Image (tube, rainbow, N blue to C red):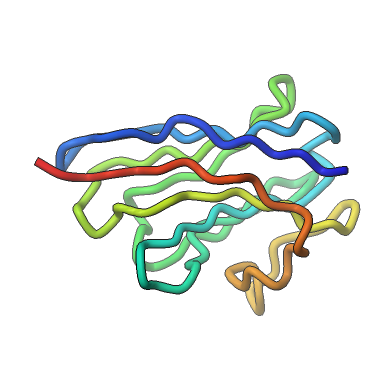
Length: 132
């Protein structure tokens, strides 16, 4: 069973930074594409960033481009989301998810689609609140 755990959320002022972590406890992250998503109250789940297995190619949503960066530390078996210049509209629960296909890559056609990651390959989320 896939087990992903997000951490690093919290309350931060506008303009501040946070680094979210997505740790895998039952499999090796570098063999799978990993996506970060967020969901604000009353909104649909939004794809934020994706990092491919092996070559580590990344995609980032236009809404956060230049402010958020996805990366992976294979030794720590963790994928990170560095979030800078945070805005109140970034407030949401942030989730990470794994593409269940071994050696999967983020594809421009659907890396942002939650359905591409499979129902059982999600963490429980971490809350980020951006407020003064």
